[in-house]
Image (cartoon, rainbow, N blue to C red; front, side, top):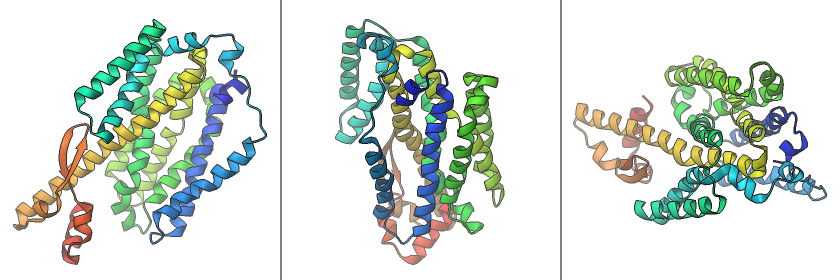
Length: 340
């Protein structure tokens, strides 16, 4: 919201440059974490986040933030809420409440009731369903965020077997695609002037499909070719979407921007990562079951015992705790089955 306020006539350009910092952070953090090696405890690697956090905190102490664009224009607080309306509230509230329900063990009925009550209260106060285009963009943000962040959260695990064959840690795929994203986000402004923000999103979606399909089937050095295509595609998703929302709904101010970004983060974690995790778990499940059937073993019943919950219901996945205490022979067998 601050950047959108500072550059009201070049929102997508400067929001893209701002979000280049995200990609740059992934590159620097990734290199540092990979350099520390696999033997370094993950807590120390995560602790690296504190370095830029402290620097940023000291930088902002003496700064004065500008008055929000919505406030400058004299748009009331209620008018801002009306841009979101009951329709927009339903989407974001449902995701939050159902995730809380998973954490605290609420039943589906309880989650539905809480969601409807909050949405009804919001709708009663605003007397608005929300801007139809904004609601559509919120729905689009779910697969968009999954394509970028959901894939990124799993790409290391998914690419590990093939990257190991060419002698590289799988994390370098994430660093490489983020480096591409870092560079390209400085050029989003000129591109949107030539093909429009919606055109850029549509083009990137098509290229992302090609890149992801190639990643799913590539081996050896072709993984880097596929990663290049995927990196090119995902570079403009997030900032272009936020810039589009800010341009189309100036009355929504910081609220519409933050809801869009927040929805993307929640969707990537709750829906995107969950779906990819479910697919990977089921793939391993089928491979181990097939191995047992062919070799008359009982690996599946011994190690595929961890009870898990997903959007698709409950299922059993590979129990990593049991596997870690298994015999070296069983560990090697499961690893071979999983990576083939």
